[in-house]
Image 1 (cartoon, rainbow, N blue to C red):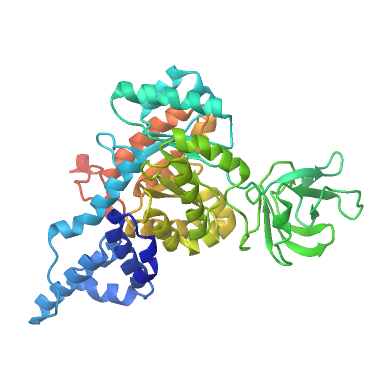
Image 2 (tube, rainbow, N blue to C red):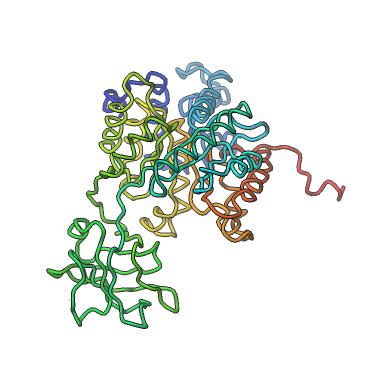
Length: 468
């Protein structure tokens, strides 16, 4: 792996991290459960927390076993304490580069998506800082460059008054595979299980066989899909499979909707879970927006990135727009099965030249891999990124009910508490986002006294203090 990655390792500070990542990927090709069970009675459980320090962990275990068994020379030295800390220190440095310095008493940063009002209401922007915002996010799929410039100016002024940087990350919109024109029966546009939808290559026509029709904003995508492929519309609220391919388009048989059905509407996302789509991750609009991003932002988030070649494309575009300037930080949004499969190579391509982080885009990712697998896969992404000393953003619908309606659900608090294993948590925009920032700040501060990443912090338990 290291020999194959060598051409991409132009940033010297990442070389040790790439080596640790290679060790980790190789180690995790093995079923380590029998070894874990055998080591546990000897008090050696550190194998389960070796992500950031693979070889020091293995050497420490080997040295301990040698001491227990009385072996004279096993060819390894017991690693020093600093050797165990280098990986965590690298993650902390990389997190500061991407998200700014941590606030006092909290390591996990809070990334807040800015609304349009942030361009002209500095007082409300000040409120976001007071609530606990550490870095700001601008979605290039919304608003205009004039609005983005106003947002950035207000963030810069407020962060300057506080004497603490607040990095601005800008999300490129990426390709949007969405419904464009929709045909549905008058008075009944709700689709139900058993219905058929014609996803047309061109605009919908007059075809009595199909009561429901929809064209696609990226029609070339439809021509890459085969019979039997899964289809999801609007984050899985309409789900089905491709039953037939006609000259006019794909026939989707609907297998699941909410009990009362789901309206077929325009500008709703279409996913094809399990189909490796050949879609350029940078659109013409993205390239125009990148001119602004390269000049004004502190980092760029990359949507629908799936291959190392996609990363290399963005790196070339940034170099052309930033001659003589330091490499711009890149955040890869992991949202497809192919991106997961290619993640080690994408990490090396990106972090080998640029400061780099990964966003777990849990909304699209859940649709792509199935909601049942989301928890498992997001754990694997966290492990892999920790092995590469790459910071992670935990994103999508964190405290969403609180942000949108002012009333959180119980499950959202558990999700927010779990998020402290990432280096940064992203909040979407909404009327009550200030309250959500303050709540998230409180939850993370409490959880970090118990756990950092996956290592338990054994502070005294206070829950039963009064009992004794």
